[in-house]
Length: 236
Image (tube, rainbow, N blue to C red; front, top):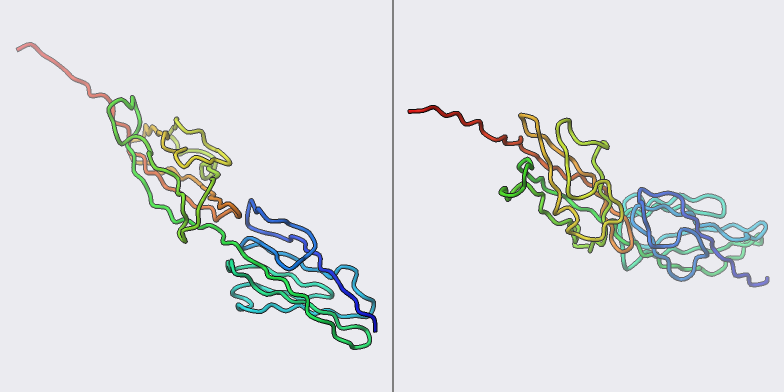
């Protein structure tokens, strides 16, 4: 029996992410890096006629850390849990004659998907901005997520695409993509001409150096605008 070395090709299948610094497709070597919550298909390149192939993952729990689905000459894996040390993905061939080849091993390192839990903010309605100290959002974007992963950029949009009726904004331009300054929203002002408080919701997607994170909603409560008083006078 001749000794045959097979190769594995990798194809990106789907993800809830907007960005990944890692390759979507290629030939598997001894190490692969992926983002958490991504799904990849691993396929035998030029399978031998009559041969069968098996794939095994070592470490972690199927259904919790990853979801592995096998098919003829391939397997699909959704990487659910981050693991910077890596899971061991092994594959091997059994020839048409029933001879079993050696395991081909790859360490798959799963980078975490950033997640941030915001707190709401309350602002006065903006008018002249010359005297009010609390009419500016004045809050930096988070530079660390809930698990202390460093964040390097953000996408920002108004949830639903528009502000509440009677509310306008100026200062920072929204929507904005690829924002790299954590101070970007510090110039944000709102004016609320309603008689009741209005809630503005910003949808923000944080990014680590490797992966896009979960979109979160930042709530900003804008208090009603305080109008100039009307002063009457009379002679005494």
